[in-house]
Length: 385
Image 1 (spheres, rainbow, N blue to C red):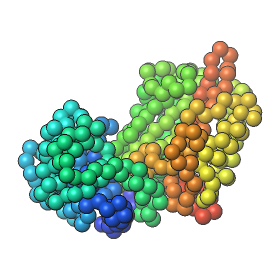
Image 2 (cartoon, rainbow, N blue to C red):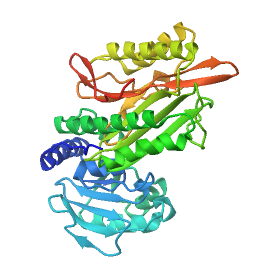
Image 3 (cartoon, rainbow, N blue to C red):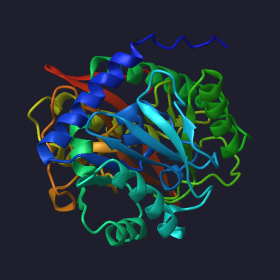
Image 4 (cartoon, rainbow, N blue to C red):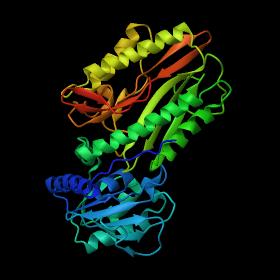
């Protein structure tokens, strides 16, 4: 296998640019400190990598002031560790309740966080990702501090991707596209759904990704049944799979494809061509200034016009240090904001439909990642369709 060469970026410069956005937000909201718990927001503000498992947001917390000096609570030390990351603004690692949901030990978390905030003279603090039990305990322990949720504001400042971020997203999409090809090649008669997902995961890890985010599939099941269970591939099967990973730097890719075992039926081929045509219509419509909901409506209209069911969920989402972040591409009734696409957005489009074949329905889906540029979308994922 060819070893993947990740881009050489100015990590310190990228960290400074991201922190400047966070610092500006703090100034506008008149905040002197933030307490962050999401691995992605901690990474964005400091460059520190904390993702270990899907529940990692309950294991870590960061206290950071307006000057960018921070202290990071982690589950893997029982003492204070000074200057743990050369080149980063994290002053210390602080001990936290280890390998347990934060909401299980809210008083212990609140005591430790409030102590640092009090030492730092905090008066007005922005909160992101903390368990509600911890927030309640903080308010009780530090009643003189003003608390403000800032999750929405943090997501907003991350929407327009910086040039270095786009380079990292290009790279992880190339790696994940290779993983798609590995899954398609592994999807042969007689193999299990576990096997082609394992081929994708092996390809990702061999390329040097930071982490494997998800691998789900659908073989001869109802729409919405995403989980492998050892189903064997049979001649004529269409197998849908959706895979993702975090590349070097923590940026994500989220792709889906349909593979075929042998020659699919003419009805499946017809439905799949319709799905591709609907996606291509969405790609052509997507450009700066277009409402996200319009993509959802127009792609689905193209499916239903030819008698196929519409996508049963959001047509897409932003992507960055999270698999799914703003903008959300869905119907306005499900959104607080029907976002307008902007230059610098990186998005995923993921239409799905089904087709009736005899006594069963076949699930078909495709997902790609794109950057929004002044003339429209540029596809970042080059996996075969």
